[in-house]
Length: 78
Image (cartoon, rainbow, N blue to C red; front, side, top):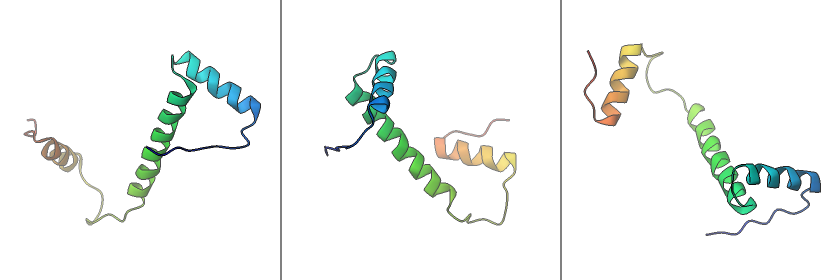
């Protein structure tokens, strides 16, 4: 694993983060790791939304359901 050091964090910010960690029953270290992971996933989601669509326009609800079921390996419902 990589170590990340964040310098010059205002004391008020550190206190608020520590309180949020405590409320969640986590150490500050674990809490911040979860924040980093969430932000990384969010950044990836933004990249995906910026991709140009391959098809020729909006999908119908039936097409969406079919694609989701196919991705899950399920048969579409009735």
